[in-house]
Image 1 (spheres, rainbow, N blue to C red):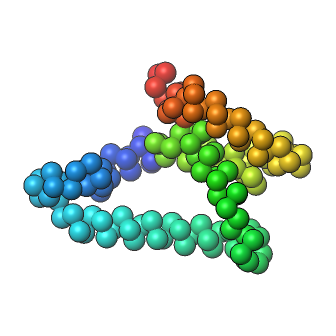
Image 2: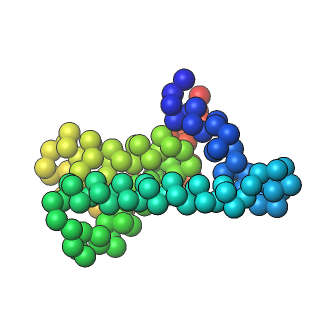
Length: 141
């Protein structure tokens, strides 16, 4: 089975989902809510640090302009377009983002039109694909 699917079915993820849904119900089931929150916070801090290190490696030097608000909005919109509810959606969004696999495959002119294409895809996804591209493909099976 695919590793991300196995991770999604693990006991840790089931605890995270239980705490996210209802903390009181999770506590009544015997889940240690503070420990689950601490582990999820530590994992998110690790992923944020990893993302910052990879950004620094890609750009060579970091400055305030490295973290522009417009670029963050585009990244979040691409995650929404790809499918925000699934791990596979995050991988698809990583391929679509500027500097990703798709922009390298299409050549240097692909990043020139990325903001316009991202905006159009966001509107289409919001209207026609509320689960995103990956959600639509997996629901069709």
